[in-house]
Length: 512
Image (spheres, rainbow, N blue to C red):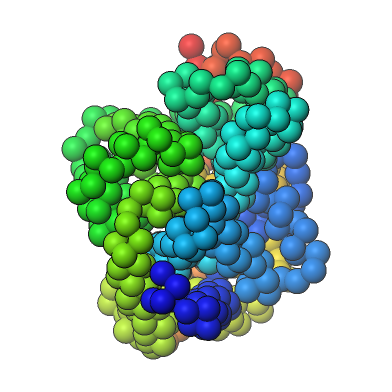
């Protein structure tokens, strides 16, 4: 590996990759999801509608320094360096060269080339890697019980922090348990796991306590509302396999499968390979099972994919590993060229496609805002998409409410906009598609429609004068309550702001 990747070349490649990621983080407009999480950061709270609060807390701190998009994305931009270092540490007992292979395989994984998005996945990936590192350290200290137990505590605490990013971090906890049950034989395995479990519990306990006073929104979203249409599917498993192939790269998976006997032998004989194998196998197997009835997001797998690089670096011959790094580097260059070309294309190229207005809204938001800012003194600004409203709020620096029922995704505005206070007020609804066929007249005393074009893309304004809260309460808020706030009867209630605000005299709806 040293002869194929001299130190100077390694630094050139590393700095080039980092330079691309910094450029990409500055050039790429904020996505709707990112803007929505920035919305969390601008309204700091103990939790938020969709997921536990960690990324919102991070963004609150980052926003105190700067609103620049590249700065808000800095944790995500630098994250691959941490993952590569983690892989290096995991593979280090097998030799410096194998550790370098592990680090480079992680850096060249496609998602670590282009993903600069600051989302709920960022803290999950970071704290999962740090938790796994602490767990590896605990196993290496098996002959020093006190140090081993302390590392188990650290692994548990970091797992708890990952859980405060997203619930599926719990799969890593399941992997720890399976590893203890089927792979570990040291005397500290059960005391260590017990301490790990105890150290991880404050985070989920806090999250449950917060949910009990906030409509159980995380539980409703993650386990009920978003799964209402889930069912047996043959498409989702295929998409899961494609996602796994892409994230891990087909050539790496092919070599591991082709040399499966060496992999089995290494898992039996090498402690690091054994740990990496089990911590990878359990979450991937559970995701594969889950894909039978629902879609598994590509981003869900990212926390565990670095373990494949670690396993490959430990198991495969160095000459083979070096070849895999070369192929992955070529794949990385393809990605870099693709995104560089994509961002250099004129926005007009997207005209007459279904992406037209969305692209124009992201890349030409200032021009769009210039069309509506003359109305800001007399109108409340709103959109009917949660992510689009969050994006425009970020770009304009002023609130954009979410008008209408929306979907089960991204409903934090349910708690931020009080529609009672808008009664009688004028509302401007910005749309990226024609409002034809939509009923707005029942919600306002008078409605006017206007439209404008930005570089060939059309936008539409619904100018509602004299907002009728009573009608909106009956036709929209009541249905929102029935669809998204049906709380299981067995969950203890400490409060539900949405229901208490709009339905103070009505008992909370329960799912029986």
